[in-house]
Image (cartoon, rainbow, N blue to C red; front, side, top):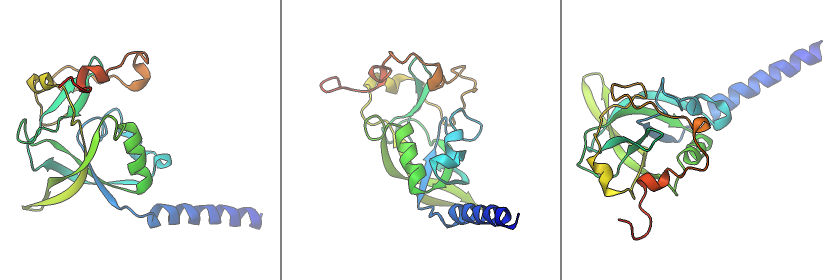
Length: 186
């Protein structure tokens, strides 16, 4: 009986140490389906993916177009500085394992590019700027800039474009062709 209790205590101590000692070395700004109450938020809360901690809400210091595209209604942050609006999102601290898993979700670097950008956050009455990783679509078809840009994404927003989760998509359909430029396309 004591041996079993020691194993349980040892397991709890190990979980405590892993949770609190793991270095949270990266800040990530999320603007789409990874936000709280959105379809992919579970990626940030699943400990198998690594560790993450919500820090605060934030807004891009630079204006960018945040659009919804493809037949799956995917939000894309287009790398077109100065176009669109200051995009609202959330700042998280994540460890290396979580960042690596987010790269898998976002198919970085083949689809999205992950870059450090300035994010404005409120601290009391002051606005401060912090550096965060942000996933951008950099090589996109120019016609995407004609789509309506939004400043704050919600899958259930007034746009009526509900996000289609990966498990509900046609695996033979290549949505990349709808948004990405291939060599010589753009």
